Image (cartoon, rainbow, N blue to C red; front, side, top):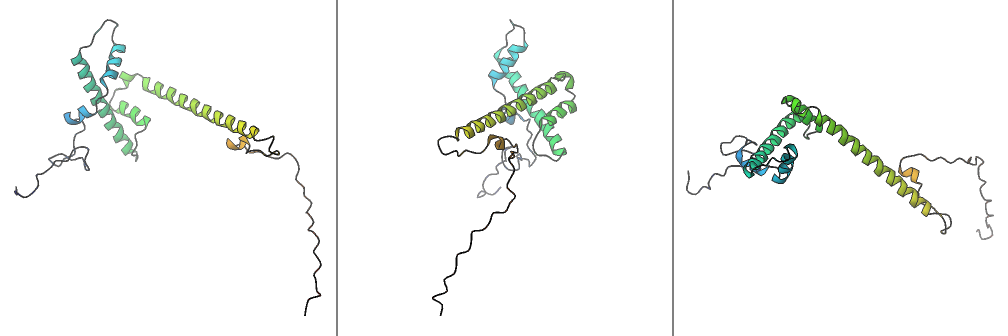
Length: 193
């Protein structure tokens, strides 16, 4: 190694290329990266307490091991789901990729349909929220359009039905007769040379 050359610096998994000192892709399950991506211990402790009988206790050491295991499991599932998304030509992981990763890893017996049920309920709740928000916007638009009529000479704001995509048609027939043009003014020809 040359004395004037800077020392070789290994790229970290976070660096461009994600290569280690040997020039190989860094393992996301390595002990260095595991510690960075552990879920909060308090969250794991809540899950453990909810899963165990009422009088069972959990040592600090056991809580740490469960936390590490949960982090590794999440990274493993993420890697599998990411592979499935890439196989389908996508760069974003979708919920179905996670469900398919569970099946590919043969973990469906553990989850016993609970993930599908959760996803179905979540989507239904999101649709309900979206419908409620649309309803509130329509009500607000209706309120603002009715508040615009009155003292200002009858001028009103746009109809609320237009805000929600409903076509409004005028029920009164339109005049079909052409409007006559005003008579032309006579030309003054006295100053012509």
